[in-house]
Length: 86
Figure (tube, rainbow, N blue to C red):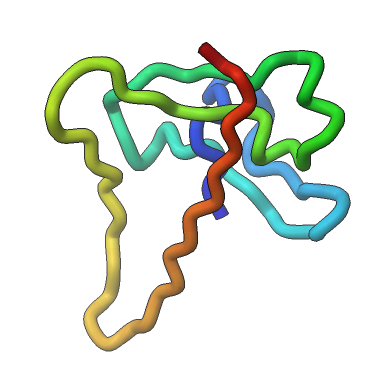
């Protein structure tokens, strides 16, 4: 699982304590965008992976590069929280 916007300077991967899922920073999969965090007053209301974000103020195309293997099925699911980051 990827934590979009999780700073590459912080320990990654980490285990999210509620779901016990392992999350890694998305920094190895994308080279564009800026990192942000939701408003500090809202952070206690959300799991850790929903407190960071990556946003794209510049450019028309911003893509994640994922290596896939032919014949393998993948589940790609996005979850989004607007946390007054801007």
